[in-house]
Length: 190
Image (cartoon, one colour):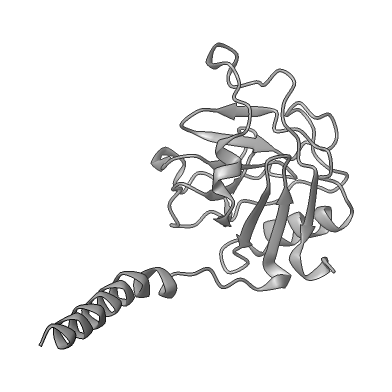
């Protein structure tokens, strides 16, 4: 009887473990290598699933610039704890530049800005996004419908959390900022 009880207990424990694991397995990120970015930091790799269904022009721009090596060694020039980490100024490195390509028209959506959302930075004009983007540390509903969502971090958010933060007195500008070591489209990585 004791042996039967032990077997049943073991089976119940395995079943319980599977029930706990199934939701996590069902939510495991499935990424298309053509629409996935590998953003290498000094802390580790951040994997970004791009959303061409939401912002096809912005996604194409990010992939084009990544393939040109534009983002390599570019600083996270503005990092605000509890809000976001901004990068992508491969021209000046301080948030005042863009790329050699023209600005993009807004591709706003109803997709909310939550932890891990990747959005395009812009000036006051909705049609001024170019190369800069940001990753949200936390939900930022005040951005919803105001900025273009281009993707989401599917792994490596713990490395984004480690990025050096800027001063709140200086609008998050970072002194001696962390940099993107390299950014590539996953399909291009061999």
